[in-house]
Structure formats: C-alpha cells, structure tokens
Length: 430
Image (cartoon, rainbow, N blue to C red; front, side, top):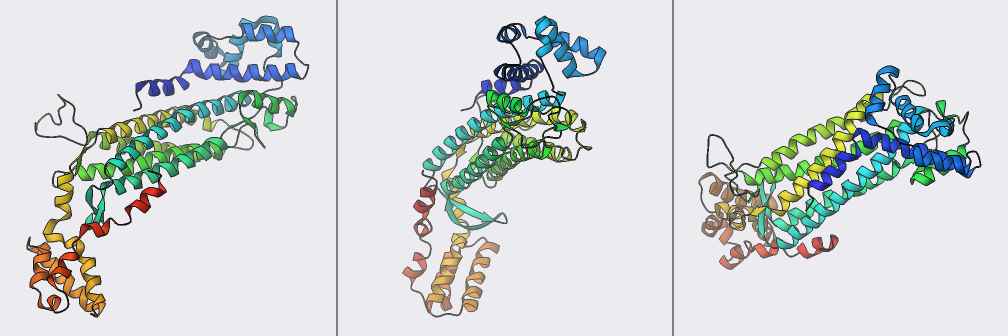
C-alpha cells in the first residue's frame, strides 16, 4: 500500500528549494560539458562544483530588487562561487535552465506515479483473484442486464489502469527532453554539442527544435495523460459509490473503528473516498485544459505559460499521486457483500435470464419476434408486480408448448454465464 512517504516525496520535488536545486543541476551539467570541450579548466570546474550553492532566502531578497527569479538564483550562486562564476550560464538563456529543470522534475514525479500505478495494479489483481467466481449482476444504463462476476468487473478496472499507465509512460518519455540553445533557440552563443552533452549528463534527450522554450504541446500531453489517469480513477470510484447505495449494498468502503459518517445521523456510512476522488479528478482535468491553453505562445517565446505551470504541475502530480494512493487503499479495504450481490442478481425470479429463454424458444422454431413478446410479457409482469419470472414461465402455455420444465429451469443456470471467464483472466495473466 502507498503511504504518506510517497506523497511527501512528491511534494518535495516541487518545493522552492528543490526547484533551485534542479536549476543548479542543469547549470553544473552545462559547466561539465564545457569542461569536456576544453572551455572550462579542470580546476575551475572543481571549484564551481565545490562552491556552487544557494539560499532560498537570499534568492528572494535579490528577486525583490531584480524581479527575475533566474537572475536572482544566478546572482546568489555567483556570490558563493566567486571569480570562476564567469563560466556559469555562458551562452544560455533563462528558459534553458527553467525548461530543462522542469523536464527533470517531470521525470522524477513520473517515476513516483508509475510506482503508484504498479502498486494499484497489484492490489486490483489480488481483488480480481479473490472474486473471480463472486456472482454479481452486470448493469447497462444502470439497469440489471445479465450475470457476471465481481472479479470480471475488477478486470475491467485493471484494463483501464494498465492502458493509462502505458499512455503515461509514452507522455513521460516524450517529455524527457532538455534544451541548451540560447535566445530564440539558434545556438548563437553556444555550441549545439554542449546541449547534447548536457542532456546526456542529465539523462535527457536534446530537443529536436526549441524556440527559446520547449514546445508546450509536450507538457500538455503529459498533463493530459495525468487527467486521463484521474478520470479512470473517478470511473472506478463512481462504480463503487453506486454499489454502496443502501438499496444496492453490494460493496462498502472500509469503515474504521470510531469513524462517524454524519453529524446528524449516526447510522450513516458514506462513500467518502469515492466522492473525494470524483472531486479531485475535476481539478486535474481542469489543469490539463490550462496546459493546452499554454501551447499558443507569442512568437518564439513569452512567459504566459510560466505562471500557470507553477500551479498545474505541482498540483496535478501531487493530486494524482494522492488519488492513486487513496484508491489503492479503498480497494484493499473494500467490503464485498457476496450475499447481496447474489440476491440482487436473482431479483424478480431471475428476469436477467430472459435472453436465455428467448434463445431457447427460437431454437425450438418460434419466430424471434413472437418469442421476444412472450418473454418480455412474463418478465415485465414479474418486475411490475414484484413477482417471479421463472414462475410466470412455468405457467405460460405458449412456453410450455415448446419447452419442458427442465428446459426452462436450465435457462436459469448461472454457471452458463461464467463458462468463458477463464479466457478473460488469461488476458490479464491473473
């Protein structure tokens, strides 16, 4: 189970101190690249590495004067390095540092989210194994359709999470790029080889093209993939919320000792985790919309994207990390009411077996339209009058003219609905 340490680790990535640490990692990698090309002496590089440091408090102090956070950062680093600071930031522009550092933050945040997804998948697979043969009713339009198992339902959730994990991995790889290309991306005062070597040091790929900033469709894809993860988490959460309704009561979220559901009604046990996840998914989706708005920048670069990204990247990654953690805990502690699942499946004398009866009558030579009308009449009578579908069939002369009692009863054999479940499970290697 994911714990609070995962969330603390995610939060730390986006703290100011960490942001400037990523900035410093980029600057030092550039200095190392210059050194490899013989443009910074070994002694100077060693001194830069040894002395380069910063203080968030000092950066804030400088920024209040210069109104530019990267300049404030560099000024503070230069204060610590001294004479050899002349080698720092050579030929670079602010976005070289900002966008390359952001790529590193995105990668580190992505590693946590991938771990979260793996842990959630493990828990879902355990739940699917446990309930492979737990009979429940499948629903379409919210209405009883045909029998299935709760395990098969969970397999559907596994499919959602696996697919969106692959989608996120692609977005994460697409975002694994940095740039050290100078003003308007023309390498006017920096050798493209510096960019290549710097990205190699940082575990990134050099951007194929940058216009002083890395194109924001890449960042939008990353945030959209997070929005998709949040949306499928919500899909699972909504299903659990529906199944916990009092008149359904097929599952319940775990209810801790001493927990209370309502300030006014002591009997309440509410699906608060599912509701929480639904609400948070709306925020992550909204953030992805902001990321798409960031794609259209003026000419080669403006900073209209910057203010939004200071919010949407920390918020979205932290929220998705939390959402995956909370869903995993909810699934692990889920209370499954097998008896209620079976009872709901058999409501109204098994009207959900209507297709079997329809097909059986057709197999005996009855026209489909005629068979449909007979089966529907008996099923709706049971539904509308709180009766029994199977009892109605056993009294219907038109049905009995073609089917024996045993043949009618055989249509209600629930095992027939489960004969291909193994083939579904094999697809998930469960």
